[in-house]
Image (cartoon, rainbow, N blue to C red; front, top):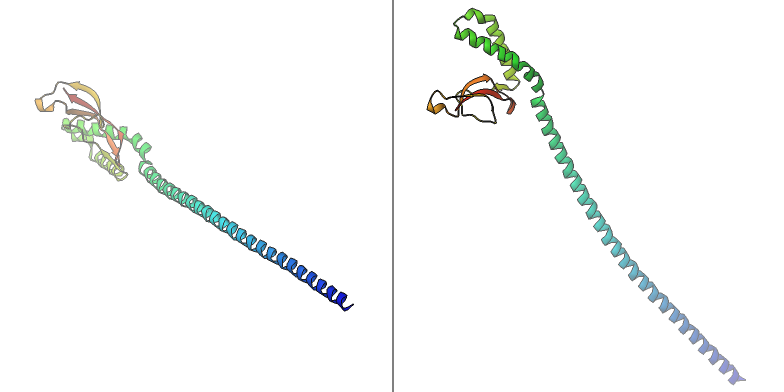
Length: 195
């Protein structure tokens, strides 16, 4: 009986050892699975981190491009506003040009005929005041007579034989003055050119 008991104990011990081995194998398997899971999690979080960094870089690039576009828009808007302010009076001054032409003709006629009463002192003051106001707004007359004909500035009204050889291709007379508003031509000069 004691042998049976010893056998049973021995068998029981072996079963316990086998159970322990199974438990140890299961534990080792679980540890291995956990390590594998941690490695995958680390790898996937590394991939996610790389992907997030890439997305952040793309968003940063988009932001910088948008910011640059906005800065260019602001500069363009300021430039357009300045251009608009410079040429705001163009319509008004263009409408006044025929009045200035009439004054020029009256003054020229009075000076040619040596009759200052035709162009009295009062009218002369109004003439100078009108011109000074127009000039303060950026209007300036174009000098044409005696200049070389340039189609950028002059419009040919007539061509006549040049009185001298050096006047060929030059403006002999100005029929209607040309005007600049700041640096922009608002009316071309109508001229007579020598040929």
